[in-house]
Image (cartoon, rainbow, N blue to C red; front, top):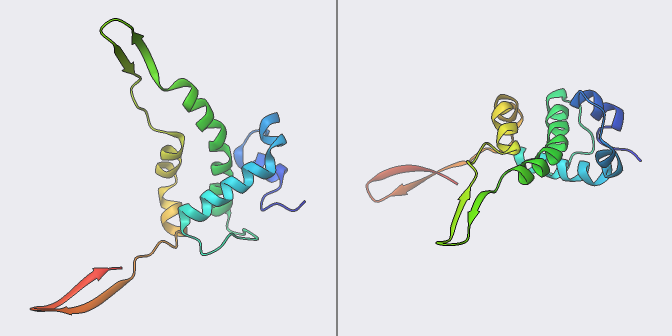
Length: 133
């Protein structure tokens, strides 16, 4: 089967071997990562080939973030409970794996994004006004 990134290529971009879970679910996780890439960069369609190394790197990181998100969900949440007088304490919110990915790769995302607001001009009562569409 042809993938946007082969398993060997994915391992090289991640800098680690794929886990057995990642390898077993490779097609599904790559499809999820690709959908996230399309959404993150506002791509008009799902790419059939990726030549830009920055985009390949983003796709690999989006693939790898799935495992991190599962671990994040396990370790965050309720920190303590109390039955009498009912008290629940939640763990301090930390940066999610996806938030970290976006923050760390902000410059590449800005360079590759196709999320561009269009500007229209129109006449209003007392002059012209520009507003984003």
